[in-house]
Image 1 (cartoon, helix red, strand yellow):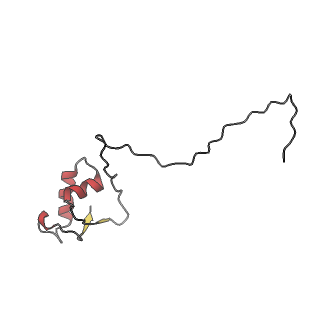
Image 2: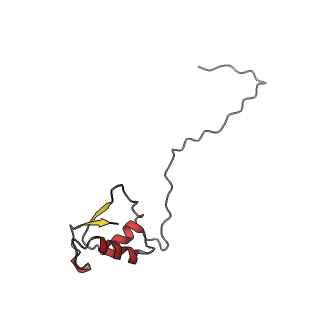
Image 3: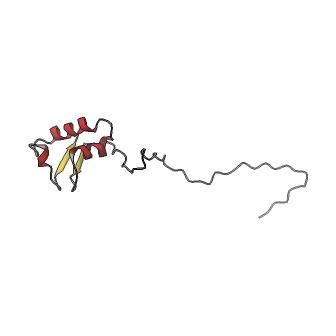
Length: 99
């Protein structure tokens, strides 16, 4: 229903923001590569199922980011010495604890 408005009436309309709220977008790493964002810790600890081509260093990068990945890879190894005696024991299908 339209309501008649007198010609001398001034009407001010506020702009509408019709864009949906979006999550912040993370910038791509330099060089145009597409590296996945680090995975945040979950309650009760995290687990990772080893995929073909995984290394402890790649797993550390996935969960913690590139900064300090070497030290984190060592921490992942130390947390999983019950299933790995050396880093060469890393096999697809293993389930690792991510400290």
